[in-house]
Amino acid sequence: MRTLVFIVLVYVVFQIIFLSSSQCARLSPNDDNLIEQTCKQTPNYNLCISSLKSDPKSATADVAGLALIMVNVLNTTTTQTLIHINSLLLQSQRNEVKEALLSCVDNYKIGVLTADVPVSIEALTKGNPKFADQGTQDAANESNSCEEGFSGNSPLTVENTNINNVAKVANAIVKLLL
Image (cartoon, rainbow, N blue to C red; front, side, top):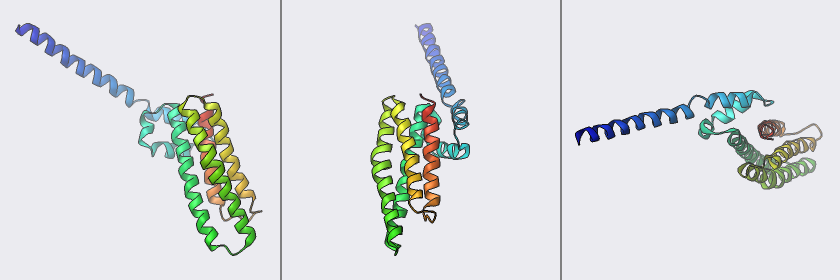
């Protein structure tokens, strides 16, 4: 009986050691490698690296998960830009600037936050990246449209550039899934 208990105990210890070491091997070695290899294929390596590594879920994400993280960064960046636009609307005295700002609100609120981001998230979640490809391209186009609405004197150049860069990085990662 003692021999049987000893054998079972050795077996259990072996399983615990073997399973835990195999789990650790899956989580650690390729985290940074996958992120780095993915980001090398985007137009803005530094933005990609900093955005992905700032999210703890990136450590265990596959490429589709990395794309989802970037789409969420796009959502956050666009939301922050809308907050800034609203403060500019309260301060602006000139009608042409207000009109351009309101156009940007439409681009970002209706275009990016209501359409592009949700479609991209759904597409990536359901494993159909073609629609995420279109959504992230559209978001980049919305930022260009907002910038062009000011005819060269945009108070949103930094924000529009940020949204454009994030959208292009997200798009490049999505394209890896096609």
